[in-house]
Image (cartoon, rainbow, N blue to C red; front, side, top):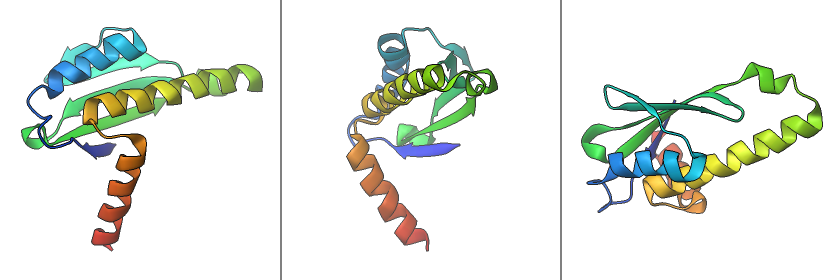
Amino acid sequence: MQEYEVKRGNTADLDDRIKAGFADIFQVSPKEADGHYTISYGSMKKLEVWAGEKNKTVLVDTETDDKVMELPDEEFDKITLDTNKKFRQFLDLVTCFTTKERVKRAKKAAEKSE
């Protein structure tokens, strides 16, 4: 499970952005249970997303689809690259941070915890 910070000022509509991200980027409707949104897409058997405390963070849990791992390399690469690209786009939309900004913040957080 990973936790990503949501950009300040963008917490009020977090649930709406999560649902919109699934619809716009993955083009699927998530299953919802207790504020957790779950889909299956590409190389992810499960992608579960939910808002953290006071919507200041978003928590993400993923599970890899073993069947995709068994595909020929060319097919596996195509599916994995597509899944990773859409996952990054989804995180950009939901957190309102770019991938570069998320990496920078993660490095800072790791340095603080050491």
